[in-house]
Image (cartoon, rainbow, N blue to C red; front, side):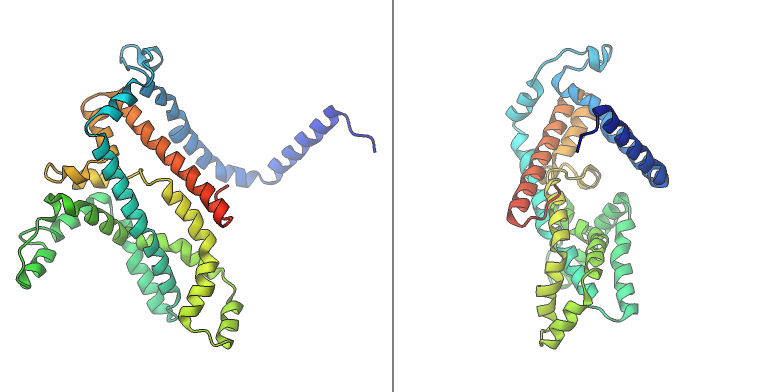
Length: 314
């Protein structure tokens, strides 16, 4: 069969694309705000990344400032606070991954086993609600509950004959308070996607397992967990890709001069360097280093997951 000329093939492809756009134009209209959002707030700001390789001079602007190569990166790597920042950021990120990642899975498995609709909805509502608290309100609650004089935690400690603990000013408590409060706030909301995955498991698998005499724990272990494993792997890859992406707001609000040894992370350092000290080029270089490491972690974990079990982002 004789092949069609290249011009005809090109016209046919354009016709198919035009036809698809006309048939699904409503979907593309709905998708447009999301695309515009990412372009405006995520892609266009990448223009400023070049600041990390320049000595920024306000009067000359970004494009007119002189190039200095890796000067700011070398300054950051050689600084005395580099290892402290990396240790604190990585420590909090790994702590969140080890504790905060499995708890929503366990919660979803437990909620899924509650058969009474009222109790099921009640538990879901109670666990979802903290997610909607603002960071400022959450840190305010932490300060009230952990106050050495009037905090409920210290009142219980004193009730049992112990000495009150100043949790927010002792460095060794910072990571635990930060991570555990985050788990309490987000575990219900994070469990939603696992509950959705659990609802997609074929009920006939459980019926067959019951007939074979499988207990509830056996069914959870051999049916529910394997059924949601692809979802778990995808979310694990995404979580691992943001280990160094410790949020700024909560750390900054909980931070003080007494717990700085444990609370100083890359994001707060970037804020001090860029916004307070006006070292825009240096702050950009530090934040770019953080983003590159997260990207490398994402690629690495995705590669390992694909080779190990076949579930990956790409």
